[in-house]
Image 1 (cartoon, rainbow, N blue to C red):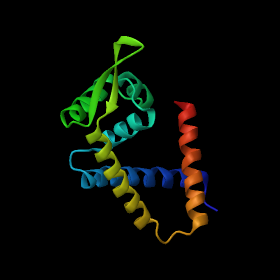
Image 2 (image 1 turned 60 degrees about the horizontal axis):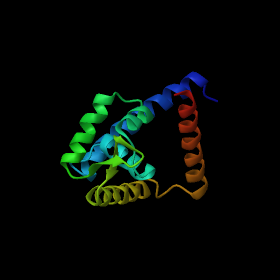
Image 3 (image 1 turned 120 degrees about the vertical axis):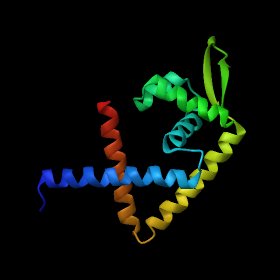
Length: 144
């Protein structure tokens, strides 16, 4: 049975490799859409719009980082700002039709890539892996 420290070292190494592959794959799936941009667009879709400050807080990013990312997404025509009907001083970010289309296309490509990579995994292995990822991300969210 491996020691806890060995397991933690393996987890750190493999998650780092996963992150590197994810960033590289994002560039292949859509040349104008980085992994960060994809993540921000997906969040905007899930939330049906939100403020830039909400994105920064959710992802623990500096506001200037989010501002630069959003500006690039606006230039690409993927995101637009709308005035909040409840508070005219607030700008809410929303996906444009073009943003929704590109997000859907990239999400479909990502799904195919995962299906190919995990094709030889049986249902029980997939379910365990999914539950471990959910558990890991839930524990990270409670510590943030």
